Amino acid sequence: MPIDVEKASGAELPALTFDYDHKTVILYALGVGAGAGDGDLKFCYENPPGLSVLPTFGVVPPFPALMSVFGVEGLEINPMMILHGEQYLEIRKQPASAGGKLTTRSRVARIYDKVKMALIELEAETVDETGDVVYFNRFGVLVRGEGGFGGERAPGIGNIPPDRAPDKVLEMKTSPDQALLYRLSGDPNPLHADPNFAAMAGFDRPILHGLCTVGFACRAVLKAYCDNEPERFKSVQVRFSKPVFPGETIVTEMWDTADGKILFQVKTAEHPDNVNISNAVVELND
Image (cartoon, rainbow, N blue to C red; front, side, top):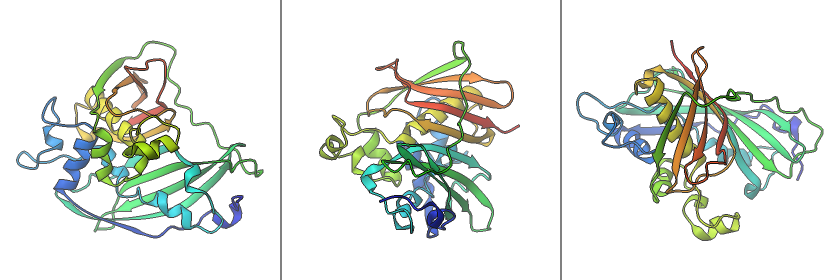
């Protein structure tokens, strides 16, 4: 059924509440590969000197908004036809690592015509119990077969790496069970767990969550350019190009632009000619 841009644009989605504690924070960190070594214990252990929260934890509280889109008038779309195409996350306040309650309000911000697909942008603002904005997210949802409705074309995302060797490269091995662990942080899509479901989607086995891959890549940037200090990490923007499979080695190639931004892309050691995450950038705080 065609998308009705006039009806759907600006629609507000149901508010989301997210109660969490230190175990929620730790489970997420484990899900994106953090552990006891290489300076990562502070993301996985709550006792002194204290627990730190990985920047990309910020995608977790608003994630259910993606499913809320199916109830929006004018977006009568087939769930099997959607893809998570792009993601932007900005950390506006460090969250309490001990836990608390976060509330997310989201809306259909824009709908673009990509000829063969539609691109729906959802914007989500997550606040803490004091009302301060902690996270701002923009989800780019692609709907296959719903383009060609004569709508506005999507602007280019940019963030093209320079034509030279990366300034830094970090490799991180994922576990064969990585997706089973990451899905406990709020994305239970069977595509990432059930071989039969993955086969129906055209894959020979379950794939890793795109946002899990982002978590690994941002950990690489955090180590390479932020001394593993999450306070220095301001925002990240990515485009999902190809899936990673659990057990593969994530290779994050990084370029320092000298203006507080780190361009990066993700490949795997197993398939070095494929780019899995493209058009990606991390902006650092001063």
